[in-house]
Image (cartoon, rainbow, N blue to C red):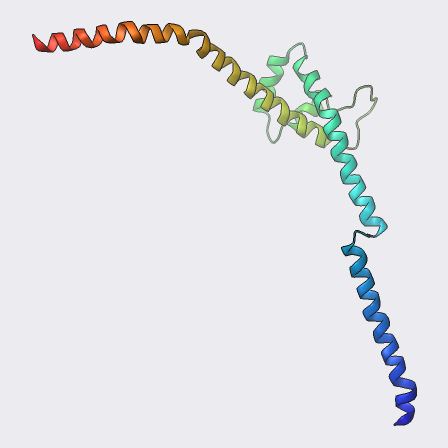
Length: 161
C-alpha cells in the first residue's frame, strides 16, 4: 500500500493536473481572444469578403445606372428570379474597376449590387411621387378651398328647396 501511495498516486495527480491545466489554459486563451490559426484565417477571410463587397458594390450600382439601356435592364432585374445576382453577373457588372476577371466574391458583390439597385430605384420612385405631390399641392389646396364650399352650398341649397 505504501508503494502505491509513493509511486502511483503522484502519477495520477500529475496526469489529472496536466489535463485540468490544459483545459483551463485552452479555455482561458479562447476567452481572452486567443484562437487557433484556422479560426483566425476564417475570420480574416470573412472580414476581407465583407470589405471587398462593401468597396465594389457602389461601382456596380453606378455602372448599372449608367447602362445605355438601364430602364430595360431594370425591368429585367425586377423580374429576375431569386435575389437578382445571376442577372447582375450576366451583365458582367460584379467586378472591381479595372479587374480582368471575376473575384472570388463576385456572387456576394452581385447579390448586394442587385439589392442596392432595387433600393435605389424604389427611393427614386418615391421621391418623384412626392415631387409630383409637392408640385400640385397648391393647386389642389386652392381647388379644395374654393370649389368644395361652392359644391356644399349648391348641395345644401338644392335640398332646402
